[in-house]
Length: 196
Image (cartoon, rainbow, N blue to C red; front, side):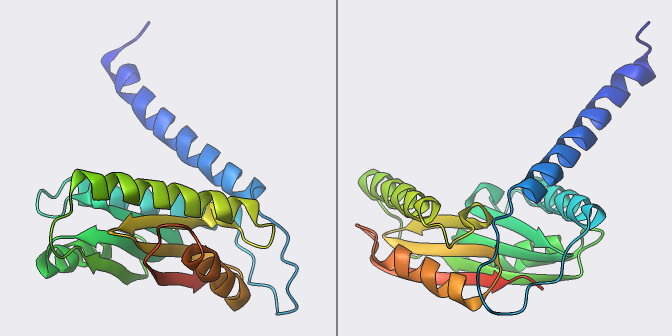
């Protein structure tokens, strides 16, 4: 029999199940690091789940704030470090996004990779930007030396923004080179970070 308490518990169980599944998939999606540098410290399943919960909390906080327009922002978390990226209209939105992210339980620090949009673009520009983003993502997926699933790609007026956490400086440099060589890319803002 479904009591009101049981009905309320289902969304919570679904959310936890989704977070656990995302963490498990993230753990299974690791490509071997073939570089000669020292390997990054390993993360535990608990850390991956915590990072997933932190990311969800930051996204919820951004979504709940009318001034930020969180759909223009990307949120990634690695061992409690939150990386914000994307494009917004004002410095006040950047400051608010950083403040909101900093206030989420479990956040150790926030790295700000958010960029101001500048003048508004046209519908044609938005379509072109989506095409550039798709081409960059495809090129990253095709390269065996890049863990492209850990790289977020956004494009605004031809400028490609790369964010996320990768294993070493070689992957950062290669991702930027691939993005620069992509048709339609007018510039690259490389905000990739090495895993701690």
